[in-house]
Length: 165
Image 1 (cartoon, rainbow, N blue to C red):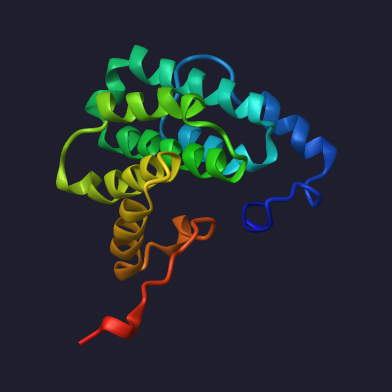
Image 2: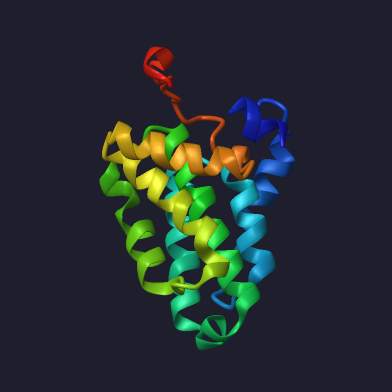
C-alpha cells in the first residue's frame, strides 16, 4: 500500500521484487491472479506491466469460464483500473492504454454492478484525452460516492464559486 501511495518501490526488497516477477505463469488465471497482479503493478517496470496486463487479457479471453464467473469479471475489471492508474502515474500515452480500453469495452458487461468501474474507466479516458470538463464531471461523481482511492493522482480543478447562488 505504501508503494502505491508514494509511487516508490524503495521499500520493496529485491527478493520480493523477484518473486513478483515470477508469480504469473500459465494461462489459467482467475480472480486471485487478477487481484494480486493489480496490487503488484506498482513494483514492476512499465514494460512488465504492459506485458503482464496483455497476458492477463489474453488468458481471460481464452478461458470461457471467465465470462461465466462474476468473480472473475470483477477481478479483471479491477485489473484494468489498476493498469490505468499505473499508466497515468507513469505518464503512458493513450496508445499504450488502447488495449485496456478496448478489452474493457469488449469484455465487461453493461450491468449496474459494473457502473463504478465504467465511471473510473471513463475518467481515465478523459484524462488521456485531456478533456478537463469530463475529468471534472467524473471526479465529482466519484467524490460524491467516496471513491477517492482512484482520485489520488487526478488533477482536481477548482470551479470559480463567485457565481454560486
